[in-house]
Amino acid sequence: MENTSNILMQKYELGRLLGQGTFAKVYYARGTITNQSVAIKVIDKDKVIKTGQADHIIREISVMRLVKHPNVIELFEVMATKSKIYFVMEYAKGGELFKKVAKGKLKEDVAHRYFRQLMNAVDFCHTRGVYHRDIKPENILLDENDNLKVSDFGLSALAESKRQDGLLHTTCGTPAYVAPEVIKRKGYDGAKADIWSCGVVLFVLLAGYIPFQDPNLMEMYRRISKAEFRCPSWFSKRVRRLLSKMLDPNPDTRISIDKIMQCSWFRKGPNGEQKTRENRSISPLVTNHSEQQCGYESDDLPAEARQESVVPASINAFDIISLSPRFNLCGFFEDNIQKREARFTSRQPASVIISRLGEIAKWLKLKIKKSTAGLLKLESLQDGRKGVLSIDVEIFEVTPLLHLVEVKKSNGDTLEYEKILKEDIRPALKDIVWVWQGDQQEQLQQLEQQQQQQSES
Figure (cartoon, rainbow, N blue to C red):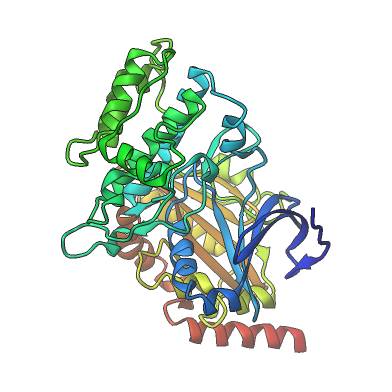
């Protein structure tokens, strides 16, 4: 196995090679400050450009930043040099689900648990207008706690990719898992195609083999188009009923995800016991900053928040430069999708910024769930369209007299977040904001000037 030992951009120590493809290699890496394990996909820019795959990279970044969910591999950040693009992603220690299935069929209760997590992840993606289009055990990973993580969004599509007929038209996916309507090269509904693939995955988990497998590709396609498959004798009646509805060759009558989640086997499992609905919300943001604690006082903040540290993490010149549209790939790629974060600079002390955030939280009836190392998490008291709205506000010290503040949605509905940010939070912060990131170039120049003045003093 190939090994490397070098520090990437002063942030990550690259380790062993985890895998590789035509355009990229994936390495295990460790955060030099946080000691957090991550996976870093290293993409060769020249190969991507020469083969016309740039759009795939752009789409993958856009999609992964849209679908932050406990059962989806998280993209932490994107970095780049002149020759390479780096995806810093969540590390799934358990490896591919395929390796576990390759050893034989799974017990029904284990398969049920994985299937519930898979459907929760796919459902979340669909609510964000994202269709995976290549769901299979090889693209499903497991973390150290044996929780499922959907990965590889390289073939995914956004809702905006639909044509005027409201359908997708690009044929893609893995033959054994692809839906009949995709094979026919006609327009198809991305959500319905994903449901079919999930049905094939469920069959594989319980049977240990693919339902439509055949050495002759055309014969396999014929079986898929007619949904010709036979369930093993150990499949329960409830599983058989569910599979017949998921592997319906007619997408118009194929079961929806909402109906799947209402079915008896999904809700109660193999033992017929009612299952609590698994968390479909977004996991808390992983912070890369120190956990050093030091108390502070503010009458506007709850005791829980006052007990934790709000000392802002420092931000260096590299971080400032990465905010530029010339270097920050994520901002460059997200022009056509809804953005869920905003940044501003302030000349006020951190204590003043925090106090104002406390006032805003009280006014908007938001609770401050936690605060640590300059990170405040604001949460609504009631569920919104997509659960509890949670907003992370992180403060970075550029110089003692200048702070960079990032406001980001970490859970809940995007439209609800954008409305409260635009109509309430931004106006309430007006008197302490120096400049919002809307004009990135202007902000970059101001930050660079401050950094230079500090270094000269």
